[in-house]
Length: 177
Length: 239
Image 1 (cartoon, helix red, strand yellow):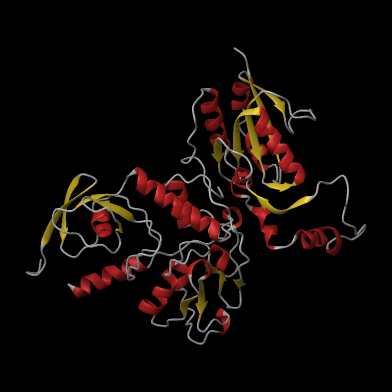
Image 2 (cartoon, rainbow over the protein chains, first blue to last red):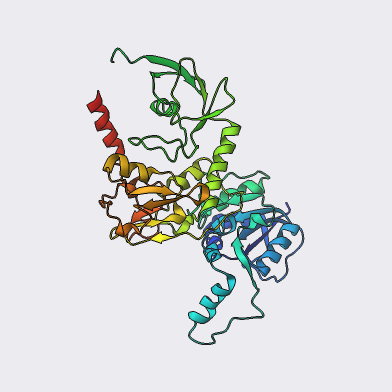
């Protein structure tokens, strides 16, 4: 049996959903026989590969880089999953939306910095005017809310997707869970 | 049973039920353990039919009616579930979530919130309308309580409990539509309200984390259920 190609990524999030993914513990051993992780923070690969079967996207779209990455993942993936409240609702990262980007950067890099009080102009991708959920930019196939979604919900969803079914996770997780 | 009370028979989701004349669809449904989602409704307070989550279908009518303020009639055939109702209820929830800043993960009422629970119960796993991210005030001027307008769904339970049960009428609504806002007295900080008795009833009827006890942190705000007892007492007295 050929393994399904899984990609994961985190955009503007805290990595908590990836921690929850790892919380599947021994269930990961079963999954390992069925999937190959081809891209993401858990493997060493710089570019988004082609022909991804399932992409798990944690985090909201906050910067130009987030947007580019999520668009590329969408283009290369058969099924794209919005994983966790930041991806689904934009959650805590969107709390900066009440302030202009300039003010956000000044607050982070100048007012609250002890040294090197300067706003980076290169290397770090530019922030978009607002942080927004990923489905406002690209079509999403499956939504798994939760902050973070519990390992059980992630496993349930992946198991259903592996069987070619569309998971309904609403009994296992919720906004803010 | 008093001579004036008349029994009506009707069906809800195909189930034959009977109830007293004048009772609402919601009351009869609940008596028969039939679930109809509600948000602005609270037993013991006057109904307002504001949130529209309890909309139901009645055979022979193309109009959807709110179950909380619609009286039953003989031979009525009520449907509480349909694809259309499901779609509209989810739409209402989506609009509520997008209209303010409901950041469940860091909310004082996380895990004890009626809006959050409804989203889960009705299967709303994402909001398909664009979020507005409005800038909303937090009023922490009161000694014991805090109001966070980001979490308010304008159900007016606080307004009604303050007027009808406590008799203070500290709360009211200012503005219209999405601009509407709960205000204390003449839109002055809560802590400076002369009419507020600090009874806390508004805090405990609030379905979300919009009104909470000062000092509560994420997920720490639980609500006391005291109005059902009050209405029970009143009901017994009236009989």
